Every structure is written in structure tokens, then in C-alpha cells.
Length: 382
Image (tube, rainbow, N blue to C red; front, side, top):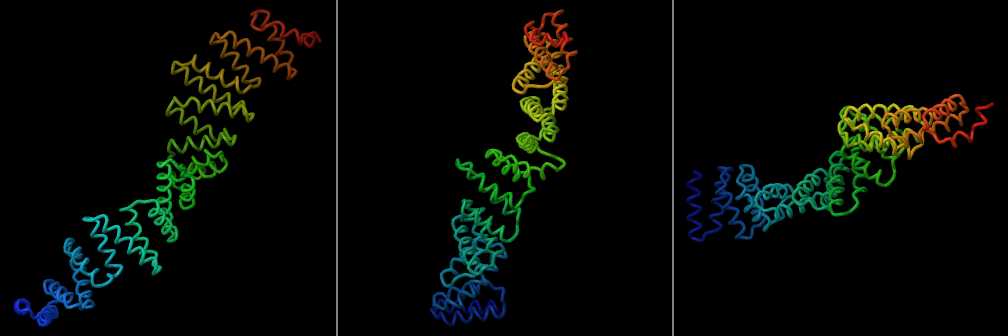
């Protein structure tokens, strides 16, 4: 029956009887609602007769059916017809944008922008977020990404919001700007995410705020598997806060993984000395000595430690250790200086017996200039 009506409708069209042909196509649809040939013809006739409301209904149905069946090329054509006779619904526009992504990036962007605007005006945040996400993916401008991040934050999608603000931070830095503000916003939404904490902590350290940097990294540092970058930043922040005992395990592990990180071990030893933890500094130094000696770098080690103690004067225990190190390395001048320093430390502590032993050693080996002892000679005669 439908086929006969289609033939009749086509004959009526040939005769120029548009109204009668339209009625036949509509009758076909009543009998067979899936007949898209009749639907398309009826819609075209409604458009020619300026029956735009009827055309919009028919074209809307046709668009949905074509989109569902995967006839994307036809669906695009139908949507454009629909847009000429009426304002497509926001759902239709969103569906069209998804289809247009495959053929026209420009048209897809325009459709998503329109859908997002409509959703924003109707205050349907979830739908607006869906449109803006697709818009930002197709056209990742800072404005679109920021809008996406703000909507994610409003919808309590914390990780997504953080991701957007991180992206903005990196984009800003790539353009030669300061991304710190964006990293700070990212951290607010995802404080336990390592990449977020790392970027924010880096910015804090660059600004000299090691106190906050430590707080930012503390939670991340409690995780079982720490990245090299987290260990590095956390230890830097801890040293800046004069907390070398906490920094030590991280620095030593980094050094064992990469012996080129010797400078970080040196910073640890220096900070331990500065904060009055000479015993711990000596333990680290002995451990470093063993490692470097096994690696055939003992001479380099002695020179390295010499530089550190020149900057950070040490006490009796460390000085005694240095005397032995310099003596075994045949560094006569440094050995002599270490003996002088040790003598002065013994004397300051009123340990005259130890000081006297050094004077006896001087007499036998001529390592220490006589004038150093003559200054305090009266003390030994008492």
C-alpha cells in the first residue's frame, strides 16, 4: 500500500499538484512511520510551501533517525535544512556537533559554542560542561580550557578541574609566562596528585617558600613508590627548612641511583653540620667515603670533603676524622691545618692532655708549626 501511495505522490508532483502530493507523503508516514523517503519528501514540500513548523518536525525526526543509523553525511544535510526553517533544539545541535567533528572542525566548534551558550542560559551545568569539554578538545584555547575547568569545579569534578588548570599552567610557561597561579588552583582541587604537587612545590621553592613546599609534598612523600622528582624536591625543601635528618634518606637513595648527585650529599652533610648534628654528618661522610673508595674515587672524595669543611667548620670528632683522612691521603698541608684546628678545639675544651699529645706529636713529626703551641705553653707546665 505504501509503495502505491509513493507512486501516486510522485505523479502528483510531476503534475505540479504540491498540496495533494504532500498529503500522500504524509499518508505514507501514517502507514509506515519508518519510511524516510516519504518523510524527506514531505519535509521538502513543507519548506517549499512555507509550512516551516511542519517542516521542522519532519526534519527533526529525519535527523534523529539518520544520526541513529550512522548516515552522518545525510544527517549533516538534514540538520542544515532544519536550521533554515527553525531553531534546532540544543540536543539536536549537540548531536550535530558530534557528527560534524568527523567532517568539519569549524562547524563542530560553532555548534558546540551554540549548545554551550544555550545550556548556560538555561542553567543546566552538566549539559553545558559536556558541550564545553568537546569544544575545548576541538579548540583548546586558554579561554575554553579555563571555562571547562571552572565548570568542572562547580560540578565538584575535582580531578578534571585540576587537570584543566594544570594544562593552563603548562601553556602559560610554554609562552614564557609564570604558570604558578594555575598550578596553585590545580593543587586546591587535587592536592594528593603527584604531578600537581610537584609543579606547585617547584613554584613555591622558586619563590623561596620552602615551608609551604614541605607541606605540599608531605602527603605525596608518604606514598610507597616515590618518583625521583618528588624525592628531589622534597629533600630540597627539607634542607631549606634545616631538617636534614628527614632529608637524608631521600638524598642517599637518590645518590645510590645516580652517583652524579654528589653535590646533594654535600649539601646534606653541610646542613647537618650547620644544625649541630655533627655525629650524623660524620656517619654520612663515612658512608660516602666507603662508597667512593670502592668506586676508585678516594682522592676525589678527600677533595670534596675538604671543600665542605672549609665552608662549615667542624668540631672535635669530625676534626679527628679529618686528621686521619688527610694523613692517609698524604695531603700534608691539609693534615697540618687539621691538626692545628684539632689542637685549638682541645684547648678550648680544656682538654690539655689531648692538646699536649698533639704537641708531642708535633715534636716528633714536625707537622704543626711551633708558634701554635708556644701561645699556650704555660698551660702545659701547670
